[in-house]
Image (cartoon, rainbow, N blue to C red; front, top):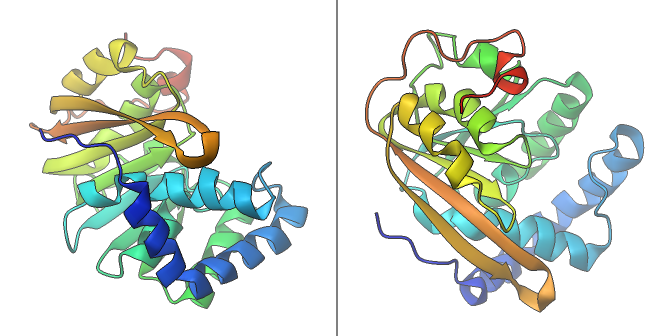
Length: 230
């Protein structure tokens, strides 16, 4: 698997080219944050780098025209910046909190994005025949530890697809490698990068889906967090 750090020079130009839509998204985020507590990061430059640019870090890894699932969409990171930058992508935004789904539906409509908002728990979506192993890519950011996250995400990815986890400086691959393998993962890589302007070190964990996920996963009833695969 070729694994190159993101080119933030190029991604910064994408933000500039799409500044009207990113500006609209920032306005919506600010308006709804007062009601729904979507993010603790609210200063415009902080949002630009820590949310927008960081969300775009995996842009080059996602195949053209991919059907993408996002687990734990929350305020729409990384999905909404990715869709603004890549009009060829379609997304299923899986979010269990109704108020956050309300925000996501508003953002999708106002920005004219190709996405459906799914008000469901990730473990339920992963058992749904209409969604299980139906997506070319599954992404998640700031949702759970890697071994728990893999159990949420890998069942949604079709064979030959990718699971992409946005993590902090420690990508947690040592702890999550067995879970990824058990759930059908093959070659896995960590891509370390540093956000511009001293905003910190981050990591993408990228796993290819090699085989079908065993039928018993995801286990549900909170087992993914309570007793993660080790």
